Length: 162
Image (cartoon, rainbow, N blue to C red; front, side):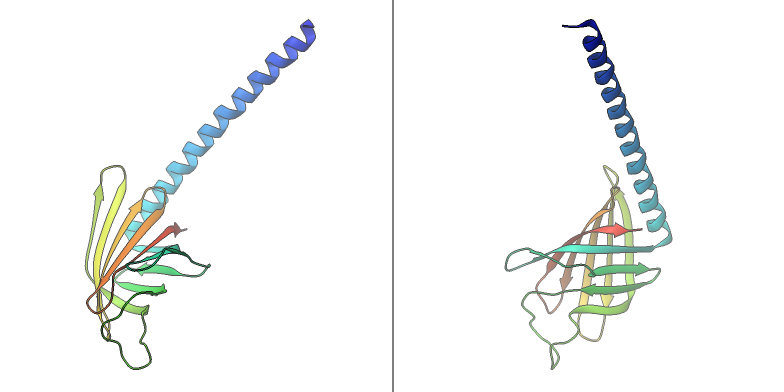
């Protein structure tokens, strides 16, 4: 092999290795920044989770289009989520489903192992009583489980929006 070609290949491999190290550092920095933003949002109780998957109790999981979300704004929740499942009692016309604003009751937030936050709260509106459980990871990914008194439970997956 030609000495110049060998030198060029060695320099090329070294530069590629250096780029890869830079990418890993940039990725770690991005992850740390996201984790910091998640923690700051939780401390202020001002956050939005955009959902993209729905998992009803009965039936198959469904991918959701853009626009469905759960907003926490201090002591109030704004839920704009689809509902699929069996409802045991509904008002005439079908009711609100999971599209409503309501005050939050019994908000409890704990940090579990692995930088995961567990958030639980209750909400009451004129149709039903709901219990929300959010597993929020430091990456911003979230799982939302909702139990209601008069409806089947349902789960959503999504990500915190900054």
